[in-house]
Length: 185
Picture 1: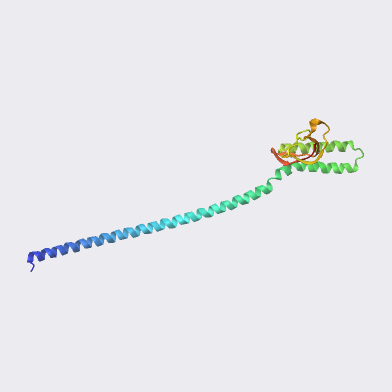
Picture 2: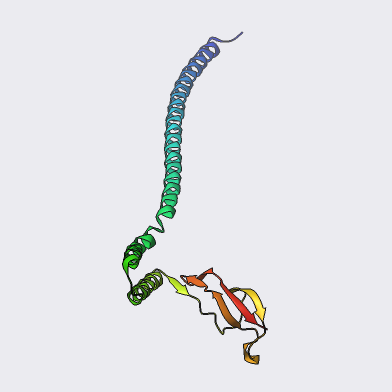
């Protein structure tokens, strides 16, 4: 049998263990509450981050659509500046046609056409259009389209352009139309 002292000691140990268990449960309960709070906080942050991501994604998609629309609009309007500069020439041509109907002398009409031609050339050059010089130059397949080969008038003209059928043009130093030429054989 147990002695009374041993029993009292066991009772005290049980009381201490119960008290410790109570503290442990309180500690676990407090830690569980903290964890629950942290999980709730992290879920709120995650939801907020998702919302920010979706808004940012939507804004980016809208930006891409806007840029595409602006690019299409810019492409449509890119030539408008050139056409605006040619409108006075069209007006001049209309006046020349009107005055040619009642004119008896051809000289003023020829002078008017020369003026209009020089106006067209100067506006074109100011916008970046440049005439290609092909006559008496070596044939270059990147610049010229040979439409015929004829006997060269001299030995020095062999392989060179002897006649230009249609002029070639550069736009901002890039070939936009190849010259149609006849090459000496």
